[in-house]
Structures are given as C-alpha cells and as structure tokens.
Amino acid sequence: MPRAQSVPLSGGEESQLALPLDPTAETPTLRKQTAWERMLADYRTTSLSVGVHPLTLLRPHLPDGTLSSRELAAARAGSVVAVAGMAVARQRPATANGVVFMLLEDEHGQVNLIVPPVVYDRFRPLVRAEPLLLARGRFEKVGRNQNVVVRQLESLGPLARRCAEDADVFGSLPAAHHFGHR
Image (cartoon, rainbow, N blue to C red; front, side, top):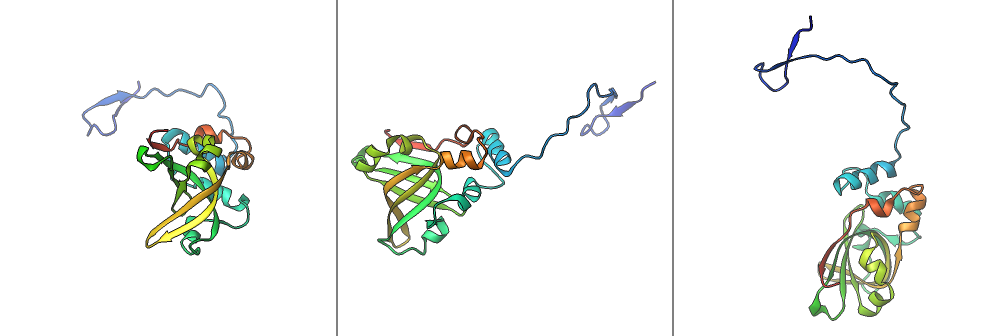
C-alpha cells in the first residue's frame, strides 16, 4: 500500500499519496540554445534580459568607429560620432517644435539622441518603431549633459537577424516607451 508523504511547506500538517508514473515517451535531447536565443527568449517572456545585452552580441559586427556609451564620454564636443543601441524611450513634446528626444541603451549605459524635425521626417519609421538603431550625428557636451544631434539613422534589425540566424528579433525586443504626441 502506498504511503502518504508530507506536502512541502505545510509543516507536516498536510499529506498526500505519491502517484509514481512511468514516462510515456522518451525525453528528447534538445540542442543548446545560442546566446541570441536565450537573450530573445528572456525579452519575449519578461521584457528584460538578466543575461547578455543585444549590443554585446552586435558590437563585433557594427561599423568601425561606432562608439559605446562609455567611449562616447571621452569624445570631443562637436565631433561627428556614430552610436548604436536599443531604443528604450522616445519623446516628442508638443512644445519642442517637432524635435524628438530618444534614449538608446547599449551594454554599458545610455545615450541621449536629439532628432531634429527634418531628420524625423526623413527617418520617421525608424524613429517611431525600430528597436535597434545606429545613429550618426554631432556630439554635444555641456557639463554633464551629453547628446548626439542626429543627422542619420539606420536600422540594425537586418544585422541582428543575420547574427541571430533569422530569429524574431523585432518581435522579441520590448517596445520603447513613448511620451508626447507621435
């Protein structure tokens, strides 16, 4: 006759009978997930990743001279720079005369982007919806405030899909927060 076992966390107050079942099928051997698959699964299920950041995986494939947020701090004010990251916030206040403020996140920190109206008009779909961006523009530094005034934007989606071997990068990464009118 089966013996009742104590239910965990009941302090011995509750008990239940064990129901041993033999497996009905062999447990399949699964291949190990790639770093991209693990990271995208994290974002898909929790909207964040406690493991690797997308830019850590993309950094080796970015164009030469693309600065990280850490490297940007050492750049000379007024210089033309390229930065890459995941869009985490977009703001287009009604009082800013069409200027869009964006916040990109890379593996080291964040970069403020200022997108003038003429650049917004030219790259509107990327500004509004693209999760992974490469931005080129003029670096401004006044005290602790650091911004890149954007002249050109490029989607990193195709590069990410190639690196991730066609995994659903766009559908897995979280959407940026939007503030103001669009």
